[in-house]
Length: 179
Length: 362
Image (cartoon, chains in turn yellow, blue):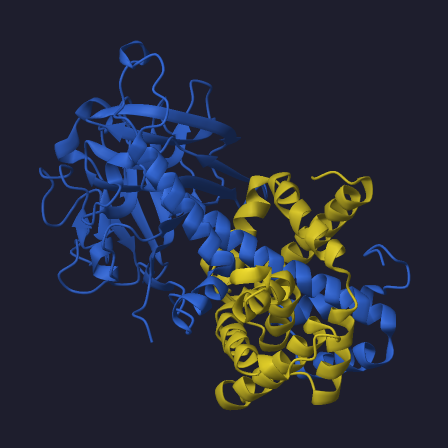
């Protein structure tokens, strides 16, 4: 913080980015569909936002602005790195941008807070499968091959586990307690 | 919006799950695009699922990083409880490691943003580890690998150091069954516990260094047993990871006093004595199993899937610190029958050893 209590420009940017990073990252992750790639695109987006921060209108939503930049960065990245990857059309990424921006801050953070407790309640085998599938962003086919199971079986298990987690998180956030 | 909202169709759930898992086919992709473009409830559901998908990725990464950091905190050597100080507390070194672990977790989640302001550029995150796998199908291994009774190559390149030194080159206890993809290992009167009969002990395996292992990577060893034999009490078979007969983690099934009854086990052998043994579940002769010994984030676990009954059970061991940082680890299969008079053969199906090696930075 500089003299006279006026927020430094970098501090202001950092505050905006930190407050919105979760939904911004999730949006990027949704578009590029791979955690390592999402990390690359998120970092490129953060740098792009910083370079353009002078053009940001503080009377408008930072998240909407950042999501728009992320959308462009993800599209550029997908064009150059993942031509063969199925990806949403431009008009749909714009529609989804609005849907991501519509989720209240508090709801996102409440659900994130509840997740660890809900994961702890899973049976060991389910937690192990989540680790297998999510640790390195492994695709289901590779995990299935490692586990000696069919891809459909692993996919079904993941779907079931995510549903259990969704329900647990909703119960936790509804009663205002964790887990 | 609740995920249990009746407006959310089973079809939408299937499509979103397939999208997130990367298993969606082009026609389904077009279908989910259409739904998301036209249906507000579908979009809200999709956003919620996508957020959980990302949160899970970050939470799992944080958990793995935490375990990896904690695994590097030295544990006290095994010793009787009475000889330990009454109140050890946290040493300054422990505190430093805990702080390092916290930083590691923090960096996994949002460290890039912090780095942005330190140097105006975001540090590159390490690429994720990649699996390197060695698979044996027992249909004729490479020359130079251990030979069976008929000189057929098994594919196993090494033995657990300290075991099998009295066995001949064409091992009479190993038999590759022609054309079946099976390796029969006849249990001998041996046991790592108390160093019993080690010169005849059957612990064929492979070196993890041949897969790029340097001592700290995650790894796993998987073997299938196609027909559990009826062994005498404490007869046992399974998979192992160790640097010597005296310093090994092994797990599998061990025969019980009750006839035709097995329990799953995992145990650390420390200085030639079995310690920290854990048991669970039951098995029976004739069952078909897949056994998986994994070290993830420094912690071992043993999973047995009983393909006959459909049940799977997992055991974790007390931390096997004697293998921390050791590169010369051998993994493989074993069969021991220390009390049996008629030594039984265990038929192993496919065998794989995998090391998750971190690639060099781009």
